[in-house]
Length: 130
Ligand code: THU
Image (cartoon, rainbow, N blue to C red; front, side):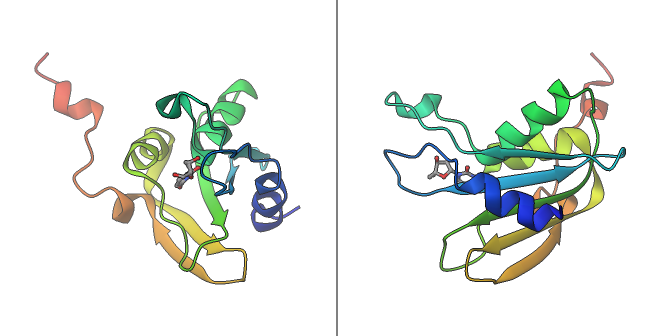
């Protein structure tokens, strides 16, 4: 299964009683495995988690810690951009050049990179004097 199909399929499982906005994310890791996640909301709104965070958790639980490609999809007028927190989460596990495809359910796609999504990222090198 391709990343696109995996993201589209997992999106259907999103738990979104509050926003009604379903998001699906799929990540490729070096083994070639695909890890998927959907957003999971909570009545205590800040406790909800994004699709990207779910996919990253699944990848780490599967024993992998590197993202080689990412795909995010939602039923949005424009390709859905990851939130700020998810950009940082993606940057933890992906090199700057890694492709992130943002998509809509009606077929629009915007292809970008982790570095373009998070310019000036905070990294471990910023703690070198600690
Ligand atoms: N959301 C994601 O899961 N990923 C994104 O990239 C953008 C936003 C979710 C969080 C929340 O469940 C809903 O979309 C509305 O913000």
